[in-house]
Image (cartoon, rainbow, N blue to C red):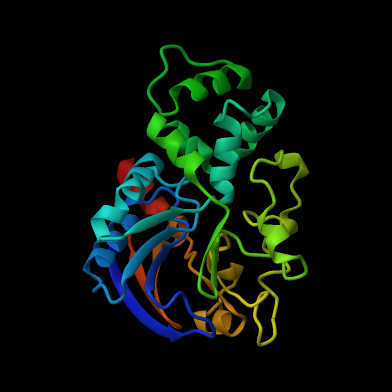
Amino acid sequence: MAAVVDRQTYLLPRAVAPDTEVLAIADIHGRTDLLDALLDEAAREPRLRRRRVLVFLGDLVDRGPDSLGAVDLAIGAAERIGADERIGLMGNHETMMRLALDVRTPWDVALHALLVWLRNGGDAVVRQFPRFEAQPHGPDALLTVLRVALPERIRGWLESLGASWRSGETLFVHAGINPNADLDGFLATPWNLPLSEVNEDMHWAWVRWPFLEAVPGPSGFSGYFVVHGHTPNDARRDASHGDQIRRFRLNLDAGSGKTGLAKLGVFRGAEVKVLTAMGPTNAMLDLGRA
């Protein structure tokens, strides 16, 4: 059973809105056990500001054993923790899933998105859909069946997701930003570009470089401190929140599937408390089901 095992507090170079406390969670990837532990802890957090906002930074789905359950927990999370508002942001995994399953996506674009999504953990989500009366043969048949089988509550969640959210001088976004691009223009990039046309460096759901290696000056990223996920532990063994904060950002992706860890950030003013939940890795869960 997952449980919160660590709590660390850091000072930040920028603050959220003075009347608001923001609770942010990133990259759960179908691990309802980790999300449940973090939400329990969030519910126990004393309310110290007039408004409480819960932000999901994207990638609730794929890879882990219970993506639909993770979305269900997210849907009811605001009431559970006493939040006034719940903000859902779109990660690259929700982008792939929605591109494939949204009936407004052109068929050829959706087929390509389906194949990419299945190769990147979407197969774990498909296994949770209602059983098919007959096994679909070929990608066209599979896409047709999946669009019909997608539960309406999951469709509604996908359609509610945004690209980014701001509080005070703090920007919340799934993957990050490109420091060489105009911020507002960058964040306005459409979510539904065909995957074959996506320049990852220029998209808020996909960017890694040059964002992760950037060392902005005292103004930060166009005046903002950035809270993000997407790249587990910065893809480094020696990543630290202290180093990230000096670079005007905080990465809350702990690599839930491989590490069995997930993080919650509690932001008040120019301070954040980072809580870490630990459970089994996906490999350990697979062994337990064998």
